[in-house]
Image 1 (tube, helix red, strand yellow):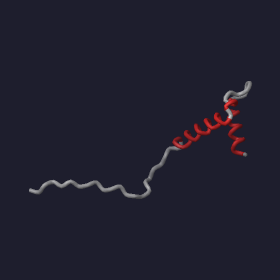
Image 2: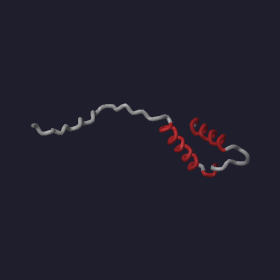
Image 3: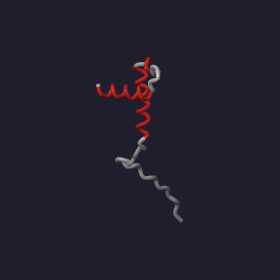
Image 4: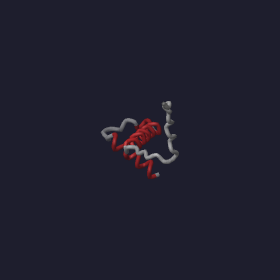
Length: 68
């Protein structure tokens, strides 16, 4: 009667593994980073003046930063 032998698992192949991230795994951290960066750059703009919506003000700032 022969003794049972243990077989070693095959080592992982060194190649490109097929990994795909969902869209929100990139977009949400980037959006959070941009939002915090805008707050740090000019904290006096954290609250909008008068009746100006905060979202419109944030989009205006982002447009200003991307266009130069």
